[in-house]
Length: 175
Image (cartoon, rainbow, N blue to C red):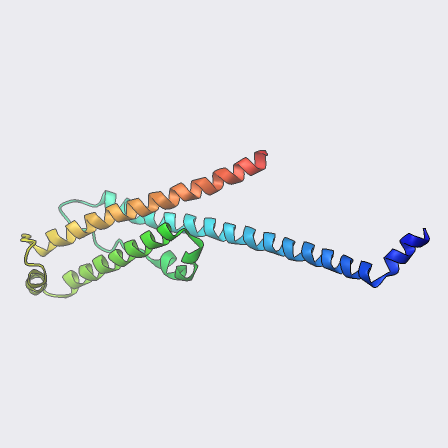
């Protein structure tokens, strides 16, 4: 008994207890931090998926004889640009590329609406003489179709990764 009492009262024992407590505290904090980051990533993915689905839905429902106007939505992307590092490199790159194209298409739309379409058509033809398109609206529609494919591709990748995250959570719960 005396030996136990002596060990407990020694400075070394106190230091070991402090060290063990510190390790447990830091480890617990890291686990909590990691859990929050995973949750943030899943929420970000879900939010971006919703925004992309809204744009997809509008594009699918558009009348082919009339150009798709005012369908670009970037509120979720813009407000979460600082958090794209939570996503995989492939997801972040796809999102940035797609939203950059969406911005270009939206600027194109604004120019069609705000400027004289004939002047805009002449400007565009000078820039892209090899295309040989009939009208500026045809060019715009082809850009919209390309963007539609990009939106679908990046949304499907986000969806796939989001489902993988949810499946791993389900597996952990079952285990």
